[in-house]
Image (cartoon, rainbow, N blue to C red):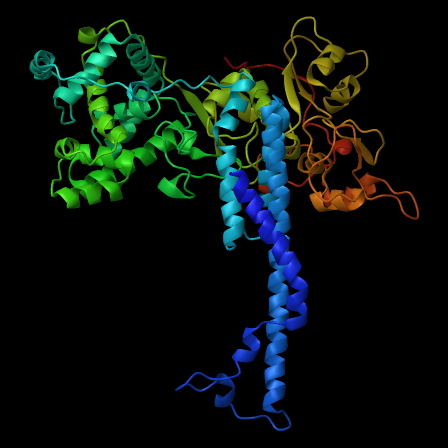
Length: 610
């Protein structure tokens, strides 16, 4: 999102607001000109018989009135869209400010709020070009390096390293005939399903990755990381009819890092797909970006590179098209008359990045398949990523997922790199990856927690020496609420191994109808906590935006007017108490926090996840 774009949107909104009164008074200019038919044509009015007592002028006036009404309606819709864009821009700018000042959690909340504003506006984002553009800009911000920095800043995601070819972009390789000849002889014993070649360009990269300490280190680390995903990617390439050795294209793109992002282009993921909406068959919204899903993005990569091969009939040109774009490669072929990558290289019609791209990948393939010859024989691949998968269609916080599976939060985050937030999306199926061997425990334990509480509540297996009070302190709950939720009698302390559902009160309420704003809060998050709409919060508190100050007290229920009434009375008509909610959000209703209890008593852990 560029600041100038946001300012232009605001200026257009101001101009539209200023012009609205004129439209109301004057109507649409075309209303008058439309009365006269063009030469050789008959106006629509004159093709119908005249109605007795109604003159042509009255018909024209009626048409003009209809046009004016339509213009007023369109102007109102445009004004509402401009207001929405302005509020989203304000949240985004607040996020940038917080990010620059080092307030990472507040920045994350601001970015989430900007996207939520668009998603919950009730307006059709796809049919309105201006709103669609704004939403795409916001998603680009969510998926930008700023968001990557937020993830790294909380210690949950590893720092992104440069890909090997990125470190070689500024390096030149003088021809070395002796080295080229040696490598060509060695290539004869190299087995590959990909057409390998050795020339001065490839030899230069092999020399760089072998003798340059930085180049060698980056290639080594990339090949180590490949161990996490190689088995599954190889299987996908085989299924899609793509040469196995094209797995090493990821060396150039990301160094096998699922969350790699290019700040300049916006490309992201292991295969560096551009952030085009709906492109490559990958979902991308305010909650999930499947470019960062190793398996789904690998499937998209295999299909895309195969389609480029079908277009050009040559793997080297397909690789060049993957990097530069098929249109540019096609024009270079047509301009020179050569459908040959190396000829295009020699004729200087390829950009520098693409000239390095193909020989660099070929060099990585040759070295990976001959490790002992290039100092890679001591390489120890990272262990394969193995997980269980369960499809959820409800919002569940990743900390709760970690509780239910006995894993660390870092492990859950690493298994789900496509999630942009610390929770799964609501009412949208999501393939949640959890540690291998924990599926049964997860499915059994999650049933004890009401569906609408899975984004806030926690789960805990009692350890030696723990009490309800210490558990409550650890998980920001209350001992009395833990006891009530788990049917624990007074004087019956929990024992080691007991499994407890922990109700977490995420809001600090100063009164039954008021809430004191905490750091990182927005109207979206407050509305979610209290089961009310953002519009109601704005109306009750006379607010014009989603930005609220820390420490400010908000009315979270309709203010008392004539007689006292509690929030529980207001919400009772749309809540349903459930002692054994289903796992699907589509079949469960909202449950008020004060009346919800888990489905069972404290239990002994019969099968602790590894």
